[in-house]
Image 1 (cartoon, rainbow, N blue to C red):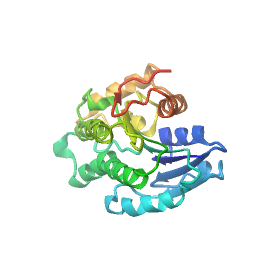
Image 2: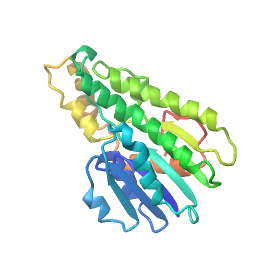
Image 3: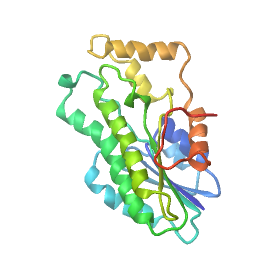
Length: 248
């Protein structure tokens, strides 16, 4: 049995990945702020945790519950997919509230860090395949007005992944970790960016996102999910790497 822990499964890319991974050989453990009842109905091999990842202090307790659902005696592999993300605040930094800034960094950067720490601690003695896939963004490198915090968080996630890869090395009990830029996908985050008011300081960036949509440049979550799963389970999952382009 392969066990998959996936965050942000209420919609978009996280939901698409969960749907693709449903199988008699796969046990899914999904985490999102709101339950996805349609997803739950599709599989009997699924546990679902309704949890707000901005609540950093309780993630350790959450992961203890998660690992109680994993039977290590029959586990072929255990995988963590850190997918949950928020875009807000989509504004100049001085116009963002302190709470928006805290929430962004908690969900986009600090939660994946804590989840990774808990995952490694819980699996460090297991001689099975253990992998962490961090869903990052090209925004870590290609910068736009109004996205300074989001970009900083994703750049931090890339550096964190590479650093943990160095720590883990390639011993038999090592956890492999990769950060990936999935490309432009037609998700709620893209919609949020497109629909920003023309009166806001990020209106120029919103115009770019609308143009990308109008020109048909967005991939579907389902297609991207296929590519990400192929990466996660394939031979191109190289320790500590940042994958800037998904290949079919």
